[in-house]
Amino acid sequence: MVEFLQEEKKEKKGINKGLIIGILVGILLIGGLIGLISLVPSSEEIKQEELKGAFLDGTPEFEAYTNEIIITTNTDKTTQAQTGLGTILMNIAGKIRNKGDKTLDGLEVSVGVIDRQNKMIKEKKVMIIPKIQGTLQPNETIDVMVNISGFDPGDDRANVRWKVTAIRFAE
Image (tube, rainbow, N blue to C red; front, side, top):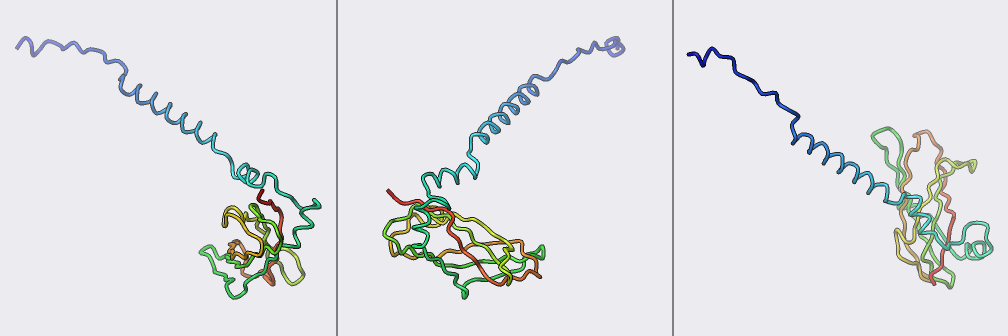
């Protein structure tokens, strides 16, 4: 009974070592993840690497070879759909033909939708080669599909305009 009435001496507990180790491991993992993410190249850096050595608009080689790339819109396969946000998504189908004598291993095109006054409503740049197709041989034709979203239902989507913006030849 004497033992029952005596006050127990409580030991003062320290900081939980397992909790501190867990926090440190978590901090190290988060720091490592941030470090890995910072090493991944941005989409702009990837695009620049893909277009390395390409001829851009304004160079003589570009002007000479642009006429050798024929792009047509396939109106039968071009569709539109309304999104859940009330905007319009257009799936623009086209054919690209290399009627030149050189193999292309880099091709960037700009696809735009214009109204009846030839004003650009929306435009999108797309890497066709190498993203969609590896190379485009002379006299070869490929089918492409480009999605452009964000049109208002009242937009006057009269026509589609394609323009080559970068060309790179296979070596």
